[in-house]
Image 1: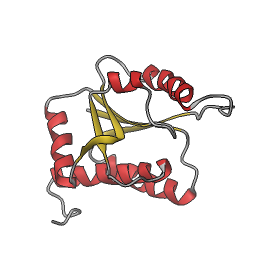
Image 2: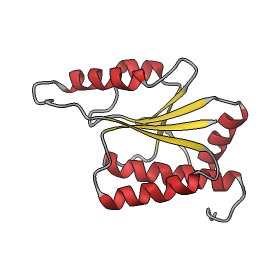
Image 3: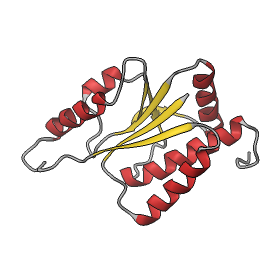
Length: 157
C-alpha cells in the first residue's frame, strides 16, 4: 500500500521541516510514503473564502484517482487515539487499499466537492493547530501507528 500526504502550500519553518523529514525517513522502513505539496493560490485578496476553497478543490481532486481512498484531516472528522489510528491503518492495509491519500486543505478548509469525494475524515484534535504544525503531528502519528502495528517500543500505554 502507498500513502500520499497531500498538503496545500509548503512547510515554511525550518524546525517543522526538520521534524517532518525525521519521521518521513523513519517511515520508509514501514510503508511507501509520498509527500505532495500543492502550491498555494496567488492573488487571493479578490477571492472569497468559498472561491478559494473551490480553486483548491480543483487542484486537490486532480491528484486523486477513483481507486484512491481519500482521507481528509478535518476538524469535523473522527478522533482516534493513537492505538485506534494504528488499527485504522492496519485495517486499510489488510483490505489492500491501493493508495491512501491524507489531505490537509488550505486556510479555509475544504470545498463541498472534496467532502463529497472523501472516503473518511479524521480529526487530530478538537484544538486548532496551524496547518504547518499539523503536518508534523500527522507524520509523527503515522510513524507511531506503524510502530504500534509492528509491536515496537515507541508507543507507551
